[in-house]
Length: 193
Image 1 (cartoon, one colour):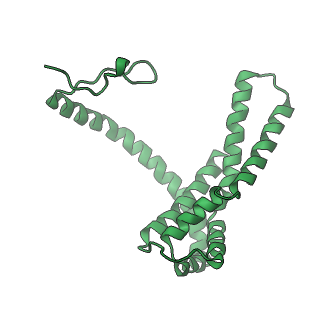
Image 2: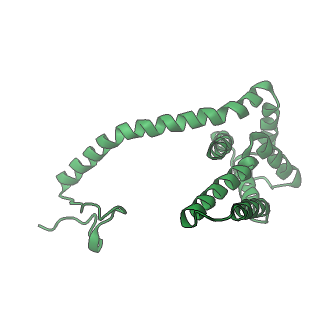
Image 3: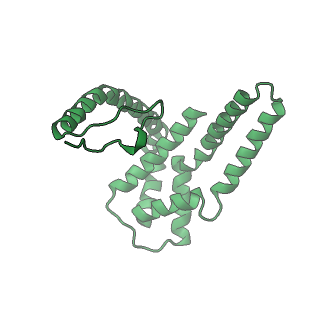
């Protein structure tokens, strides 16, 4: 479930990155034809499959919470959760102002109708089809590499920030418990001489 959500998000992110890379800030009207082509593009790139991933992810989280609170909950409880999550997500995706409308507005903002048509043509080619299937995996691997890389950079970053704070006389209170933060709202205040 989480893998499917990551893949759908990655395809959506790729489509949005393609949109962001193009210099067109759409000043044209959102016609019915353009909106229909945007929906085709979202379907082609998998941007609309996110509802399935969301449904699976939310159902899993709610089911885990039920299991933690009531380990002997009847199977019917999990069935109800799955049915209601799916029904609600599917209904809300397409309501006025819902996910589809909001994503349509993003595509409209960054892409002209001609560019959308061009992307639809591209995604109909063998290379475009390969991009749709491989970009989510590449994005997922890229995110994993980025997370590992940042773990290596984090200690250096912490040391550099601490050194600069020390240089400027900025004292930070240690985190207060597992949530972090300083008692009495003193975090980040400069030490008084």
